[in-house]
Length: 529
Image 1 (spheres, one colour):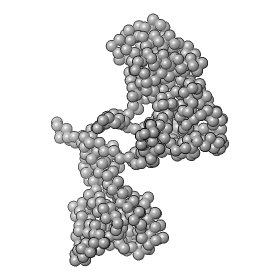
Image 2 (cartoon, helix red, strand yellow):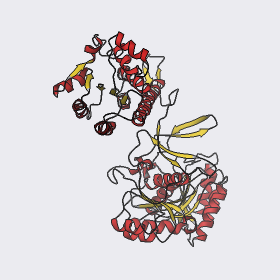
Image 3 (cartoon, helix red, strand yellow):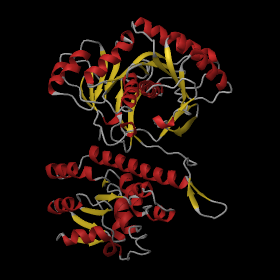
């Protein structure tokens, strides 16, 4: 049995080669890998010795040779293939260990030039991987260090690899080549030579978009029982994102669970203070900050207890026993938090169907949590196409606000306005959000008319027994007429935040002055469709 080893990432390769040698496998290698193995006292032949042809063109040509590809591609069950190998003195290669030049890591660097990218496009590696993967019945191809231990264990136990293992390695190899070629296409498709200087410049949107996602699980069904569904993650998921969650207990997640859980998690991550977000049908129905998980949950739940029934609950702090006792009194579908106390987890065992997810946040202080695990771009599928845009990751600061009314907002009102604005960003348009003291008081979402959203928010507050007197209101887009402002002020609002930018801004400002309320412009719109 013979193995060819040629790796850029040398993690675990010495141990692998040593174990293969102990199993009687002959070793062939290239360049730096061969030198490393020889330094470790392992008997290894360089590819140049096998091919009788030296590496050339700065290593661009070394494995592109019939003695390599013939050894990989020859079918052992076809006599003509084996006769051809014998006639040309070619040995079979039974195991190929290859990982590729670090193209993805190279182009991810801020200072990457086109020349850097080109020189990190692997040619021989992918060619060998394709050959070995095509001939999977006879050749095992390893493209990642995580595969080494399993392959060695099977070789030690059985003396060979099963068809299932070799086929699985082949699929993983073709997946890796697809990912690699997709990354190259994405990068090169984004390069445009400037007409004035002739210099290559990278554009934000490439001429071809190639996405790679890894399936996490098949789902019972989609949004509705007649639809099939599956759950995928990015090839390289960001820390703190929902796809990194660990499910500690509960039923299998559904399509709608995951969709709503993502909405809740993205919202709760936007707060620095201890926060709780309750989501129902993609919209926050209760959001609050407090001194701890219990207080933030209690305040969030007060906003709309009816809608909170069967909702998705997210915390950005550890759920302790006190918070767990409060949550366990209600029917909840999914619960998310960075961590749970042992007592809290013990309590939830009594509610076996509750899906409890743990999502590690790298930091909760010293950086801005809202940036963790956020997509850089959003994609929306349309008929035979897609829309792509930069993600709405804008964070509003106090210094960004422009007071446009005679009445100046107090410090407390400014904090309430910023809180309301943060929540409105995660509410479906048209969005109207009443808040006070770090708590949502009424949420109007997803209406065709901004007036209707305002009325619904007021109605929901009434159902929950909450007074809107003195509240702060956020509108995700400008008021086109004064009537929207009049509705929220009639409901009790004392200050308003909106983007501004309407042709009738002055009419709305005059109305705010007439009604004696403070109004600030954010200069930013947050449509969420």
